[in-house]
Length: 256
Image (tube, rainbow, N blue to C red; front, side, top):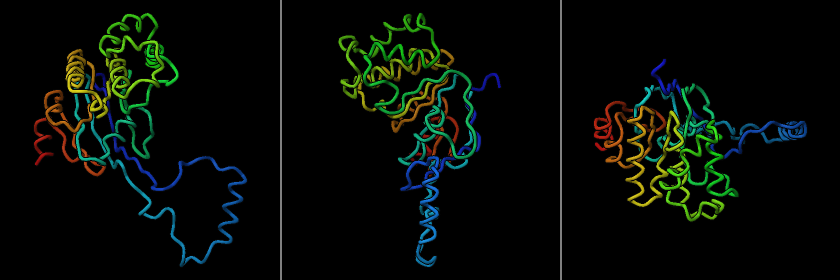
């Protein structure tokens, strides 16, 4: 267990298509449902809201382990379940069944627009994110100049991030996630928002993070980036793991 960073066991995530997010019913809601049930038409004309056509399994019985210091690529076609998996690992959403264990502090960069408070400045958001990660102010201050230099946003440091372009936002978000020393760094395809030079800089930084003994999970549609950066890769398709192993092997299988 000591060298294990991530353990995923029989992880599944179900969505009900077209239904609102579940909530606790009030007494009035319950009464309304009873009334509708009493006055609903005959059974032959009904369609059940829980029919199989309403159910979508974004993930189905996914299991794998990641050791500390490994850099793992998650690949697969659109809709394979990659982003859903990362959201569960980042504790943004909960699985329907199964479990996911992460040992250590997690830094994540999943979607443009998440992770920062839009009304706060770039400077304030750096300190806020550090505090969320459990870092002391003196630790954040020690990394502050590196973060600003990497993101190249020094002119806009005192500007609320809601006024940032998507590229500026991603530069700062990645700089914060990578420099505040999480034990596990989770990065989605969001890096594609940046220009070519920034993407290369991010890949180099993730290589450095891996060499420092920290764990990286990286989702990308760029197969050269996966083979360059990742020791291993996991191929998802239709919510399940179809291949796992050395990155060059899994990428070749996917392309074929």
